[in-house]
Length: 266
Image (cartoon, rainbow, N blue to C red; front, side, top):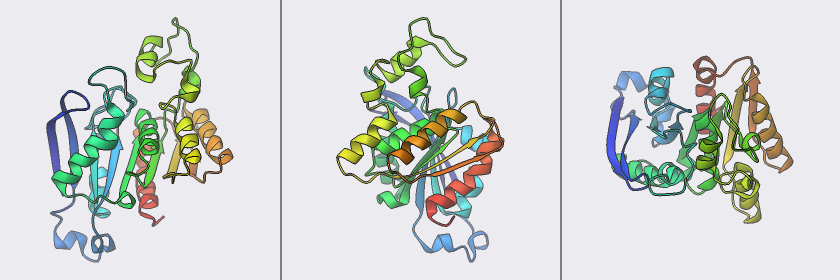
């Protein structure tokens, strides 16, 4: 398995940025002997980190290297700063365009990855779970399946908050700069629920969604609420809960099952 660190200039972010890529193209014959996943072309998973993280988080905290080899899966891990992977106003803040379009096109070209959306998945944890759900819904022609672990689906927590708002994560000014007008989130492209409704109105295919959250996680109710929204909207999604908090122990527990689900072998 090859590990690449790529530093390049991103037009969407108007700066040099870094991402890491795992490519199982050099696995020894002994390692992949009788592995059926090598009887097909390699598939791709874009994995997004959480708030205050970076592109190394998944490498340091999870078993992604093992998963890459085991399932013949290229895993691409970008740095999204604290953007929630949304397109902010102003130059250099187009994080959704970066992850969902520019990065996909670049990695497909450079690493020879499949251009078929059925071979292309996006996932993440916490802020990255929100980013995966949002980006996957924003670019439904690109991603066939979406995985959100302990996703920070906080739209309804922050809509209509006032300037004196401050919580354990951030304050009003941060949320306003990242999500835009907090009084208009219901009808904002930064709202995954709005994107679902728009796709339904346009009669477009909605990527399949997998969600998991710990029953002791502080984001449990937000995940339950989004799953209920999907259910009421007639969208079938895989939703799982089990004992756990907001940490790598829980995310590692669901990394392989979510990959197997993405590959259609769960």
